[in-house]
Image 1: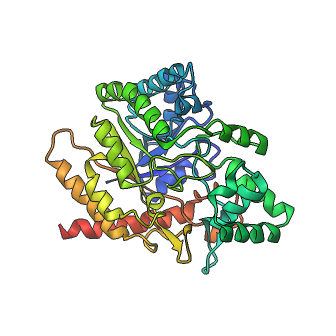
Image 2: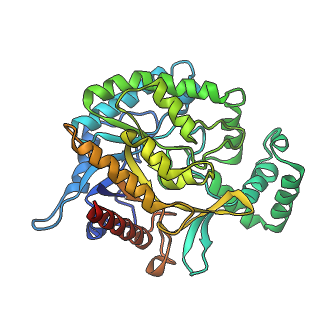
Image 3: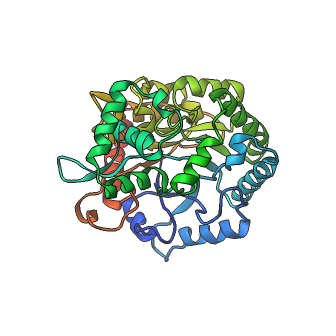
Length: 398
């Protein structure tokens, strides 16, 4: 497997020289400064690639090999009139990346919001900090801060009462922080930051959009993109919806193994693949990650290796646990990925699976520093070391 590391560009607190020290060989990044829907030019890509790959003599080189992500414009998801220009621009960006040697592209099709958490500094018993999604807090935001139209129909009386208790326990600063955590933008997300009024307006655009409609819009998008991806040798790796369930009245269509079966049955192109985000899929108790890693092995082009610990009393709530200490049998997941790589080794033009440690804890010297939530250096380095140890041990066994 190819060890990779996510980098958010020159303003990332974790520098390229520090990433080099981790032992990772590949960089996962994106042109974050380019607005959604605009073309990534060859000039911009080459310039960014040079920043990543510049290396003093005698130092270990790094390569930019994975994009996470080219944002999919909201007009594509809604299939609005004129959205075809944004599809064409997405294809042009993909073509320019391929011309520059970057041929693995992670993307998602989440409407309005990207990955969502309620707490960016959830204190663990060991003193480190993790990301957390708290369902009662999220309901408090939805019902009493956002005050989304008809939202009460989606909650039981008990859930509404609990959300009200949580809301009443927060002061204005805490309510503002919760709002910012959910809608004001997180590092790496491919959607815009919003104010509450703008957010309500964006949600209203999806009022009459069902899961089937959104899925058909995804299929229409991919039907145009995949033939060109195949011709270029590009592998597309769709990321699951995070958390993987409907929320805020929005349909979510990449949440389970059944969703993936529908996608791959409809569009069997070899370029139509997935990002196995272990933590995201495992935040649903009905997703069996080792089984998914085995079932979808040929479709896995990229994997985020992290786990979550779900609240036993409220399975929709979770925090991001240590990479090997969660509700996921990570050793079995990695074993399945290694088995897939052995299968690929006998095929011409075989490709290793890109992996990266995801969402590490904020710990040790990183506590108190300015960091991108989930992407501090030491916590991810710990996760990478643990993952590397499992890979080495399992590889010795075969």
